[in-house]
Length: 461
Image 1 (cartoon, rainbow, N blue to C red):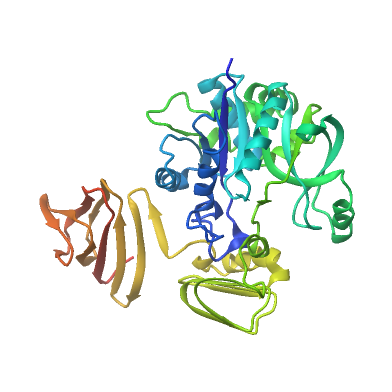
Image 2: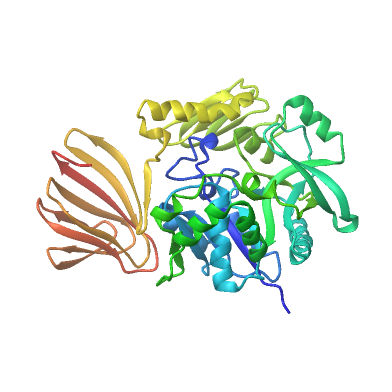
């Protein structure tokens, strides 16, 4: 009988250590931090195509990001995805418990879950496919499987796995002896010199039934909360968990909740160029560099710089004489810090939140289910925005109670409905929206529609 393997992609988190490019409204999985011209989630979709015999993936994400997942899946050529939508983040244990319950319902208890965080990079995809095949073999024997990465440096930002007795050395299969917290530098150097320790990648494989049996034994209250939170049915491929029930599940990682306590844990040791790109130093290490160790991307110019990362999606950023520095620019924020302080970027973001600065959590570009909008300029009594509407999507109905609007089409063709009148608008054409008008904007075509919206009034937010 063919083994059913369902990829479970965890597309959560906030990615605060990659601020200002990654923010709460646009977490790390949904941005391109490496310069691949695709997001980390899209890279994950591409990686799955290398592994034979996989079913369509199940994406676990916050409900607020479902339209981002759907749009990026389609653009990556992966339209057949199901989504398990969390009303709030509760860490990986409740997420995987709910995913196992959903997979058991849809695919049967013998289905094997391949758990992949959506914010990792993997250089050797063929090596990844071989490791998955080895992991599937162990999962089929009712092991809970982890993936251990051979360390290449004394990293203090990763947790470690201590290997136990060998199951099959040819396939790099071992029993797992212990999970180890992020070490200090001295310990990390000791682990690097030993063949018995490896990085904990945060990727797993197990049968849905085996994982649920462990939840029943080790976390029965969490299992009960997740089971109660699971929707009985859905009209689409998206399944929204109950806020009331899911919030009862403790916020805890799968490592703490299950893996460190279970008896049947095995590991596959692999070396396929893995990184969780958890901060800007990790991004620098994983990126292509010039002869002086400099990563320079976007609207930047560097002179006499060494071992630094300089990139900008907004204004020109000029690096002069930088040594082991981070300089990251977006349209509304710039980060400058030593590479050695990369782990502390989250502290800066927390400080911005304490000051009530929206730049800490939100980008200027706001993504919606119909597309996105971005404020280009605003002042007393006016605001200028760019609005982009997805193909065959509608901008929601609005009443212009406080302002007049002037819509100018710059890309594509659309239809403006104003007081029931349908008005076609094309490039270099405009439609005026008087005060008090009820209107919406529709893109009936197959390409994006871009509109410049000039709003004038005493309230333009």
